[in-house]
Amino acid sequence: MCYSNSTTSTNIDLAGKYKKKIPSNQADVIHYYASGFTRPLWPVINQSEEIQFMKWGLVPNWYRGELSEIASKTVNCRIETAHSKSSFKHLINSKRCVVPSSGFFEWQHLGKEKIPYFIYSPETKILSIAGLWESNIDAQTGQFQNTFTLFTIEANDFMAEIHNAKKRMPLFLNSESAIEEWLSCESEITSFSMPAKETILSAHSVDKTILLSSNSNLPEVNLPFENRSDQLSLF
Image (cartoon, rainbow, N blue to C red):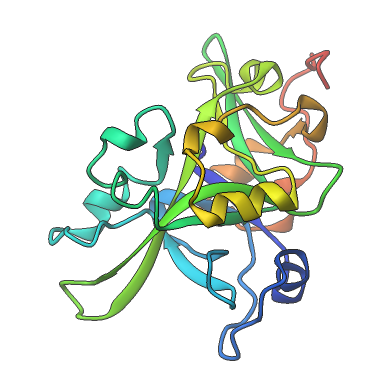
């Protein structure tokens, strides 16, 4: 699943790619590494004229319990079961979004060893991940909030070798026309469920000591690092 992500693009970068306006009161949000379970603020693209900024971990508008409890279960949405989940099914035809990413992190299991990888695209600075968003009122604070989730699909061969435990990957929208069609909410979501071309993705292992530290949001967390002597022939 995609629980760890990165966004290092400025508001100007995002506005240019998605043809959106920049909110006047919102500074750049930069995450070299962020876990969805910490509910980070993220730039998100929906049908609004402006870039939106939302918390990761979707909170349904009917939910009145502890936010962290529901948000920890809605960081991702499996495209195969979205229509049957009460948190997501009412949003599929009205509140789709695109989540910009500079790359994401997954762990490869080799026996008892776990190797973290950073997966990114050498072709484009910004990957576009399909998602859903929701608006509600925080029952505890009374404040208005927007939240989102990321769609995941079955991994392609490239990602299955890295994320070899669960064999999942984000649902990427690989063209401007795909992004426009997704946001229009007019097509069935399963029509977008083909994995991304393997050639658009690349990966390298990263330093797990940084990734597991109390301060993992550093530029160095994205850099190549050899965690073991043998490297996958895939890379």
